[in-house]
Length: 225
Ligand code: G3P
Image 1 (tube, rainbow, N blue to C red):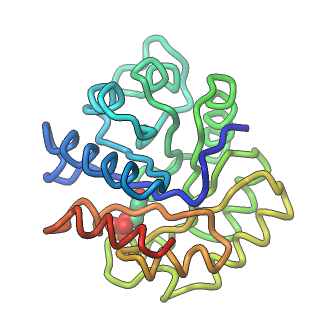
Image 2 (cartoon, rainbow, N blue to C red):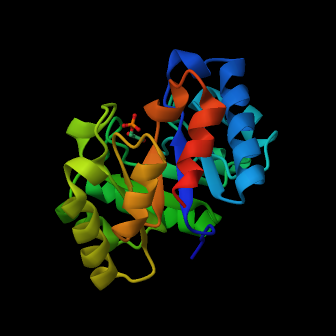
Image 3 (cartoon, rainbow, N blue to C red):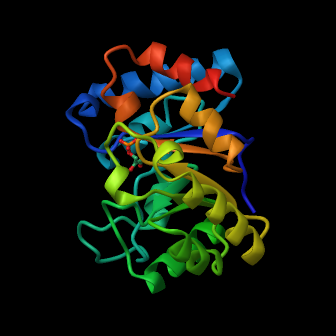
């Protein structure tokens, strides 16, 4: 089982205009600096087209935003776990709310990642889906209510029970899996609440990527730890 030092802050850059081209590297370097200053584990998920460039330039773990359950070969436009590994990534998101996969493909992607030594974070929309995914023993499950994604109210405020319930239920299926939470997470108080609910960290995007003062937001996030 691959693991990072908890708690972890996973920053998904998505494909916002702010991280097009050199913007991805700028943000990854800010996260690297925040990790160095604070000693907190940061993970960055740059846009797919910047994955290799960023992975070779920063010391924080770099994850792909997605992998397909397909091996190398004639798979035009798809992303094999093998290609992500070769690009220098340490792990990957799987089944993000904005890039859903069927359960068989989620299971296959987790298995291949494990064989390749890639850390897997499987995103889910509910406790029930998290329980189903836990049967395949990913390294992490990140529970994110889709309706709160990109909004201003953190999952830890709007629906704290989904976090604590997911932590409890996933632990019953496989105690080695760590649970993250995300959607609307913006500040140190949200991170603190997430950890208080039993999560091992957070997965967030807009609060960092679209921030006017990225440094200040990153400092604030780690202040909750
Ligand atoms: O992958 C993170 C995510 O979907 C949550 O997005 O913008 O609510 O932090 P956001």
